[in-house]
Length: 152
Image (tube, rainbow, N blue to C red; front, top):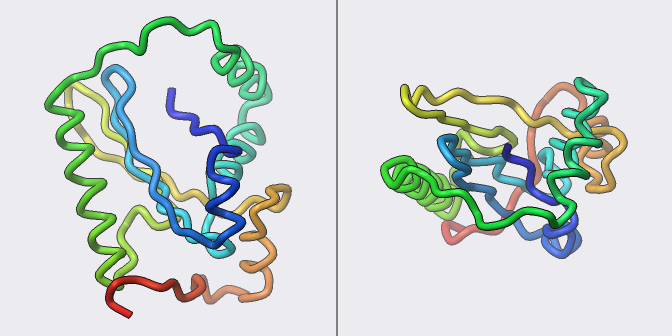
């Protein structure tokens, strides 16, 4: 289950620091979303959208995050390598001034087929990140605010 804790990124959201989620849990690898604070959906938006679709999601998250977990389960080395490579490529693309496919989206691959699929993570109106307010102000343009990158 991929469910980043939104509070861990609160300092990055507050300071306007872009950040990219990535990880592997057992046989599922995830890259994204690349969060551009105030412009794209964040981990909080992801959690709220999921709760809108599944009323049991908050209960499941509470159980999962209760601290009763033991050792982190093993993951497939090949999948972990693929996820690390894709995450690095997306980060480098952003640092070069581009908006990679993980911008406001989550890419997921599950073994054994390693079929990558994408899910858009839009801003959620109830999220404190403020991206939904920016999206409403921009209209249908779908633009995201400019970010400082190594490219300028």
